[in-house]
Structures are given as structure tokens and as C-alpha cells.
Length: 163
Image 1 (cartoon, rainbow, N blue to C red):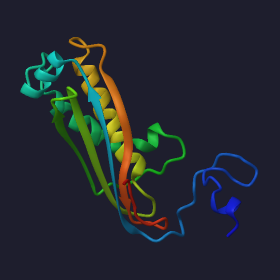
Image 2 (tube, one colour; image 1 turned 60 degrees about the vertical axis):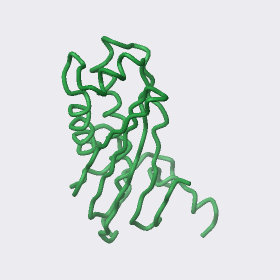
Image 3 (cartoon, one colour; image 1 turned 135 degrees about the vertical axis):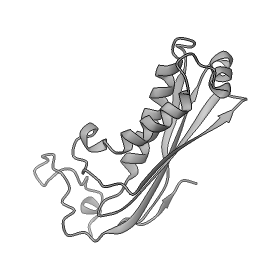
Image 4 (spheres, rainbow, N blue to C red; image 1 turned 180 degrees about the vertical axis):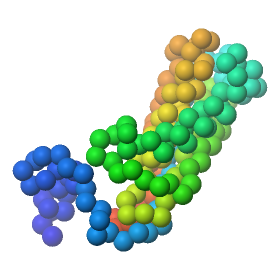
């Protein structure tokens, strides 16, 4: 396969027009994607989130549900993505005291014909945005950082793991 054909972007046809990738002939396989990111905040906001004392309620509980819901709605948010029947979506949080940050990790799995990287990345993004929304009355300087794919498995392109 020529280098230019191998590296051609799959969402464009030979004339450069945007297209949805045809996955009709692809085999269904188990696919999993894990993405991560973080939101840093003031020490005050961090303490309130960590203790569950934010005035708007259970910040991480709401952010978890928002992230899972977002993973299920990617096709209505990002053009040319396929609607998917997701098998599993999980959003987890951990605290980094030193950075006053909440680290977010999302895992999305499917048995299907296309990957779930966008679903995992969207889950992390929306979870972070939900934390921001619920904490902005205390801290408007929060920063959402370093959203990235950590690993994926399954599909024609094989496995990927960030080193």
C-alpha cells in the first residue's frame, strides 16, 4: 500500500468530500477504549468536591452520569460518527491533592464494527465540563487539561497503548 493511501484520512472520499466511513463489510469484534483527563481547581473547590460538600450536590456522581450519557450520544455531537450500541461505559475519578485536581478516566466497550475512542474521549470531556459547571460558583479559574486516549483494543488497526 502506498504511503499516501495508507495515511489517507478515512472521512474524505477521493474528491475530498466529507463522508461517513462505510463499516458494512467489517467484522464485529470486541473493542475497548480508555481515555483520561483532569480538571484542576482552587484548594477550596477541591476540598468541597472531595468531601461531597459542594452546594449543588454530589459533583462526581452527577459528572459520572453525564460522562456515561455523553458516551451514548457521540453520534449526535460529532459529525460522521456512527450510532453505537455500547456494551459498557464507566467513568471513574481520583484525587490529586498536590495539583488540587480531579483526574478522570473513562472506559467504553462494544462488540461492533467500529471503535469507541471518540466515546471514551467524549465521556471524559463531558464529565470534566460537568465538574466545572457544578463548581464554577466557587472557582471560575478551573482548568480542564490533558484529555487523551490511553489505550484501545480491537479492530483492524489493532491495539494501541500510550507509553
